[in-house]
Image 1 (tube, rainbow, N blue to C red):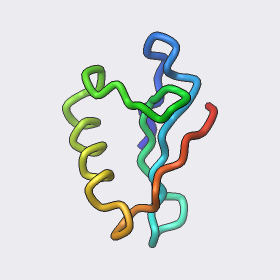
Image 2: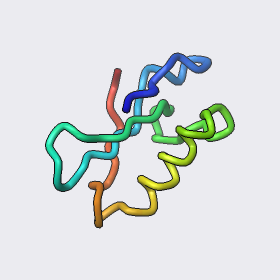
Image 3: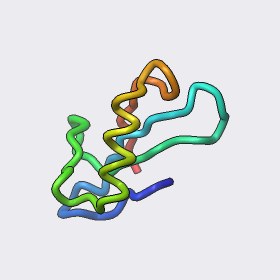
Length: 69
């Protein structure tokens, strides 16, 4: 799932949570250069995915990386 959209200039970066078990599987969220995700701008589904990914870091997903889009 990739929801990196241009949200007031935030679309230049994305916070990416890569699966520890399935190659190519990841969650990606728009963020700023510091990795801050504008959670107020996420859809309900994206917010649920973001909170889920954060809660299972080290269990299902790797520590997130900030990537230039």
